Length: 264
Ligand SMILES: Nc1ncnc2c1ncn2[C@@H]1O[C@H](COP(=O)(O)OP(=O)(O)OP(=O)(O)O)[C@@H](O)[C@H]1O
Ligand SMILES: [Mg+2]
Image 1: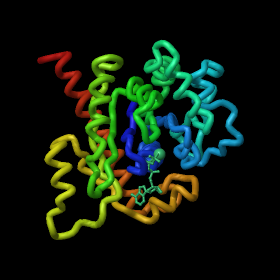
Image 2 (image 1 turned 30 degrees about the vertical axis):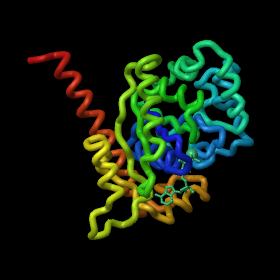
Image 3 (image 1 turned 90 degrees about the vertical axis):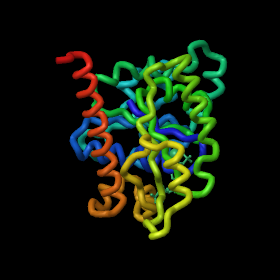
Image 4 (image 1 turned 135 degrees about the horizontal axis):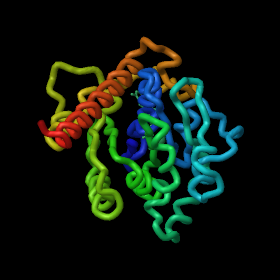
């Protein structure tokens, strides 16, 4: 279970959720997107008509519907969505006055984990209770950073929240990596922004970077992942590379874990 988060708006969280999930599905990994953002952009981006949705994450969090009933299929085999609609924003206030308010999502979606290889959680651009719930439910965190000046601004706050979540609600949470998004084509000159980011995160940066690409931007208007629109696009290739990198990362980790459990 992977949470995609940054409290900064427009860093490519939803674009990454939509296109990474589609790539994982193309690799025949059973994948679920849980849309934790009241904007519901990942829901729309995966081609779900919100008007036709019967249950969504709000109903699941309130306990009105079990999570498996709210899951809907997409145009792609291997890819499902637990959708969000705007009324999910009411959950921020409701959660504020609830006990175990950080752990409700985890409890409600727990039963889904066995059915999927990957579950991606898209989050809103804030560090409110919806994001806290997603961080508490997830095992891994991907932090998209837009390749631009001030990219690191606000990141300290996210990392402070990650530490708090680890200490209080979810010891398992680990950073899978920082994902550089909307990168301009490489120039010959060393890029001061990139070197600032790599100094700070060193090995925690995905080798794959996502280029700034008008086709990626436009694909959100078509309400489908770019891979379904143009399988040969640069952006499709980048998100396929990211899926491949992620699959290998987890394979290595699980091999390492097995080796530690059965030494010799
Ligand atoms: N690699 C890219 N190339 C060009 N445009 C991009 C790329 N990635 C994202 N965009 C565009 O940038 C805008 C913001 O992206 P996106 O919605 O994914 O960010 P977000 O972090 O989910 O935003 P929010 O914080 O509002 O949820 C969108 O218009 C999207 O189409
Ligand atoms: Mg978004």
